[in-house]
Image 1: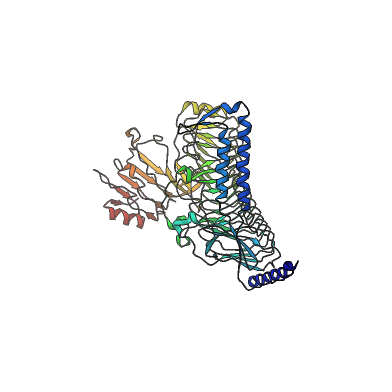
Image 2: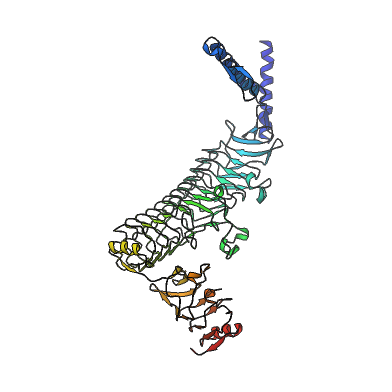
Amino acid sequence: MKKLKYCLPAALQLFGMTFALAEAGEGVRVTGSKLPSIIGGIAAIAIGLLITIVMVATKEGRAIAVTPTGLPIPVPLMPLIIGVVIGLTLFTTKPDDSYTLNGVRYSLGEKSAAAVGFAKGADVPEVLKLPAEVEGLPLESVRGFGGTAVREVVLPYSLRRLDDKAFKDCASLETVRFEGGEEPAEELRWQGLKIGDEAFSGCAALRDLSLPKSTSGVGSRAFMGCAALTHIELPGAYGGVGSRAFSGCGALKSATLSPDIQSIGTEAFAGCAALESVRLAFDEGKSSAERYPGDPGVERSDSTKLVIGDRAFENCAALRVMEFPRGNSIKSIGERAFAGCARMETEVPAAHLEKYCFEGCAALRSVATNKGLAIGNDRMTVPEGAFKGCTGLVIADLRGIEKIGAGAFENCAALRQVTATWAENIGERAFANCPALQVVGVTGLKKLAKDAFEGSDNAVIFDGNDEKTRKLAGDAGLKADGGWWFQCEYLPDGSLRLTGWPEGSGDRTGAFTVPGEWCGLPVSAVNLYEHRYNTEYSLGHEEIIVEEGVRTLEERCFENWEKTLRRIRLPGSVEAIERDAIPKLYDQTLTVYTDNPVAVKYAQSRGFAVAEP
């Protein structure tokens, strides 16, 4: 009792000193106990020994196992050996120390520290500022602050992980920013910050979020329900955005993602009704088109191509700008990924498409299969309902596609032309209720559903004189024509750019006319150059007539005629003739018939004869 009489005041005094130091800003470090590891190690050895005894007492005691090194070991000894290995591992494990500073608890490992929440009974500050180092160790992870009343969080660049649910349901949290420590260099993005699942889920007041450029990925539901968040920048998040990461962020207007991003998860932005743009980050803030004009980009390997998950942007009704990575860099676009994005004007990239992926995208004007490469690449299919209800769609260039699924372009009221020279199978109601459809270029059909063009009474199948295609068209009640048609692209000003026509089709002698209008739309630009290796389809026209309305003749536009062309007639509407648009001929004289000053100047600079039209 006497010893207790003196020890108790001393203990209280020591506690008081410790508390005072903590309040003064000095941390309190507590060495982790090895007792749990010791108990666990003893238990592992004991269990292994018990199993060995039981096995020895049974028939298993006579069994022999041969290790990969060829050493025979009695089977009953295996549990004991495993138990000893586990036990020794636990015995030698160094426990993490704990550290408390300004009411925040930290776990101290051998090489790094982690913030693990507020100490019991500590006052929760309005501004939580975490240091870049704790006891000389870099702070690399944060967890355990969910449901607290912090209003602002200041985190160091040293962080590598915001663990799952780190700040989940912090209803008062308005601002998250980073300062202190050094952010990893661009080439070390793999060392950057990974935001865990539900890290900020339910932080309904969060509106000011500034993440490091080196943020490498965002987990599932990481920002779900952050109803006040208006903008997100993830220029380094090549690892991707997890499922439902921003679902329910009703105020989110713009997102900037990495140009190397590899995944956008299921429902990642679903229902973000205010989202207007999703851009890819390039140096100096330039878009991909601005930074790499005319550059199609480097094709990624299959393992690093972008995968856009099911319903990733479904019902993002305000989404107008959606930038995709350059080149052949997208592996797949999931089911209903952009369904209901009525304002989206982007060009559809080459990728594996899933059902109804662009249903109801009323602002889409053209679908191009990467200038001849198939949507879906090896799949070579436009799936069921992929562009159903895209009421603004004008041109569908489906070269390379073999199968067009049921309802793929149903109810596309403005669709004027479809080029599908490889198509073998057109499914039920694939082009139903497309009243503006005039030209459908197919040359090798094997199967055509009877109702594929129901309600599309103006459609004409241009069959390239293929008898089976013509018969299938007749059975479906369609008109057929053996002539040729122009492949074309829809331009933002509502005009067309003619890009070619099926090889071998059309008259290849006499005069060739470039129309000023095609499918009821004005033609403003022309580039009819195609590589023609087969002399069977070489062009033999002596004269080209360009009709009024055409404004631009693009580079190498008429190069296919360099062996036979003798006369070209150009209208007054032509405003630009690019380099080598009209080829210099080998052994004949070319005469340009025009009174257009632009055309006259071009002809004279090239040494062509000029005559009145």
